[in-house]
Length: 296
Image (cartoon, rainbow, N blue to C red; front, side, top):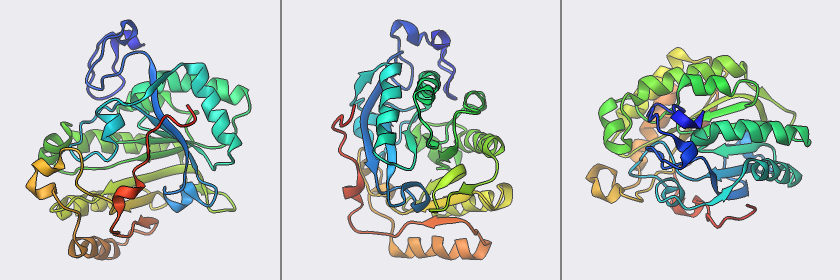
C-alpha cells in the first residue's frame, strides 16, 4: 500500500516502499521521537495516571506555529520497526497509563495497524487514542475501524485562506469535518470509566489563534450544529509564537485576555455542554515535551 501512498489528503501517490518521500517527508520506516507518560492532556485522557503518548516524527501539515516543529517539520526522531512499535505500546501499558496515545500518526497508519495486532496478541488491553491534526482521508479513517477506541482530532480552521497561509492545507475545513463525522460514526457514544477516563468516543480539539476569534466562533458553531452533544470539545488557549510565527505579525503574540474571554462567553451563548476550556497561562512553553528518544 506504500507503493502509491494515498494515506492523507495530499494524495502524493509516491512509492514510499523504495525510500521516496512525499509532502510529509516519510519513507516506509516508522520514526518516533518520544514515548512518555504525559500528564497534561485533557482530564478525561491523562487523569491521575497519565496518558501513554507516542510522538511520531514528520507531519502531513506544515503549520508555521507548530509547537512540536522539531519533530514535525525538522524530522527529529529514531527509526523503529513494527515489532518495536508493538513492544513500546506494551511497555507503556506496563507504566500504568490510561491509554496509548498515538500523536500525529496519519503517515504511519498501515504500520500502526500491524503493530496494534501484535500488541493485542501480547496483552495490550487499554484504549488506543488516535491524536490527529484532522487533515485526514475518510478512507484512511475507515481502515482504523476496530483498532481505535478514541479519536482526538484537531479542527483548526474554518476559513480556507488561513488554512493555506498557516498550514499549507487547502480545503482543510471541508476535509477535516468529513473525517470527524466518520470518526464519530465509527466509535459511537462517548464512554467514561469509573475514574472519569474516556474509553470510547471523540474529543475535538481547537487551538485559539490570536487575531482569529471569528475563526474560533465559526468552528464552535459548526460543532454545536453538526456534532452530537455527547462529543467532547477541547478549547485550547496554549498558543505561543514559535517556529515561523514571528514572520506573521498577527500571530506574533499569545492570545489576549480579551480574546480568551470572548471565546468563553461564546461557548456559553451557543450552549456547548461537554468538554474543556484550557486556562490561559503565562508559561505555555514549558509544556512542550523534550523529544529525547526516551523509551524508544
